[in-house]
Image (cartoon, rainbow, N blue to C red; front, side):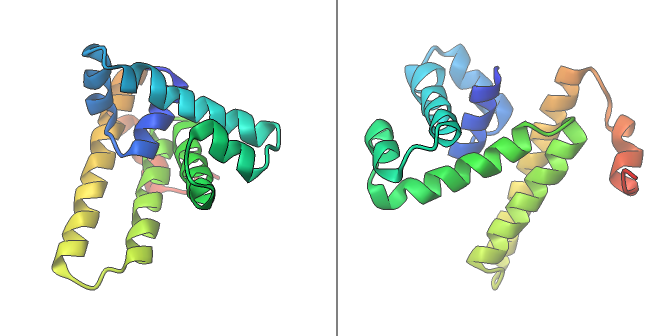
Length: 147
């Protein structure tokens, strides 16, 4: 997996191991189109494209461009974290903020948030394996402020 694929996984709602499995199957949606979308959004932001140009390049409705940009920025925050622990923390934060936006007014919605946090844990596990670390390597990070 490369950075664009991790961001794509975040933007499209796939866990990292699930996205990796999709890549292994050779599906061009995952190997080509989704990462190209991520790359186009990043380029658009770096080059200050207007929303009309972004909509045209992404082939989406102009009204949906702000959502695409927001999704990219949130995914980038998670993927570009300093390490797996920070990525996990940023991901959980995003999941909680999203749950607050849609409301936590039922058991089903709370269960959905719990499920999202469990997915975040699965991604953390994927990342620490990639970093050749163990959960306890992040114990201090999770318990104490970094400063």
